[in-house]
Image (cartoon, rainbow, N blue to C red; front, top):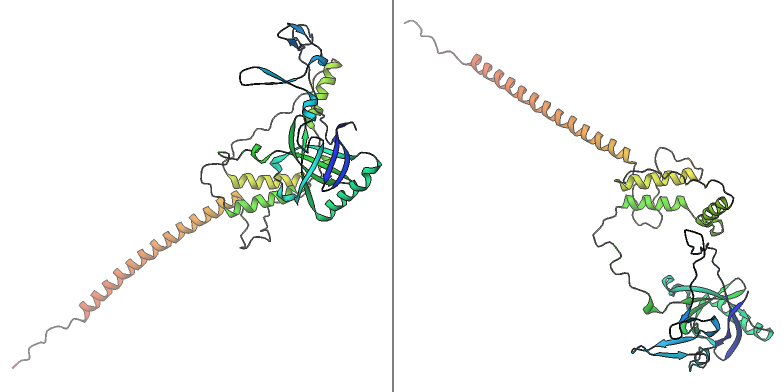
Length: 340
């Protein structure tokens, strides 16, 4: 791999000569700009506005535009003699746990290659020290005209460095989260947990760029004069009105894609870290059935109550009639007069 920077790692009083090489590469397909009428290439030419002529790359340098519009030329020699220790040195300033680094700060990645045999011993020393401490090194270095922040960590048997954004270069997430109060039910969390468990993990080696492959197929088809591959019909789905139903269907689809039997209902298990046991939510259809059953039971109870009330009323009336009849029957007749 071709190095893009030569310097040294400053580890206290230990200096480790290294070369900086890119750890990543882009496989994206690049396109040229063309004239649509005749297919001619569109090129950008670099002109000097004072001489009004095209200039070569060797004639182009750097310059800083001042507030009044004047240009101050800056050469590579000017930048290489900057009065800072990181001009040609990756200066380690601290060792911290890896979880202290916010992933939002992560930038380009590089490999640090030992430069020559004398660098082998101190390079190995730093690598093994990082392994044993389970920490990463925070360093400062200068690259492409600016001082940068970096994080050194062990990758295999090599030391890698991730460029880091300065903390003030990371924006605060203001106005990004929903500004409305949303309540998430325990049943919905349980289904989300079940979906996460069903999807499981993935080996990143199995993932690939399907978009790039599709573009390559289109290019090959056009080059061969063949018909272009047709895009699959997009899935037509209505609006998701029920979050619970959407989660349950997602769990079912994920299980089917993994070759598991989904069953009639999505099985939801409460996770062990939850303090309170929660009942697994039933499917939407089950909820409707339960609701209908409750309504039916309520209606029956009301009807029974009405019947009982009516019977009670009738019984009261009958009892009252009987009591009246008894009173009437048992009413004593006035005594008859005896003859003198």
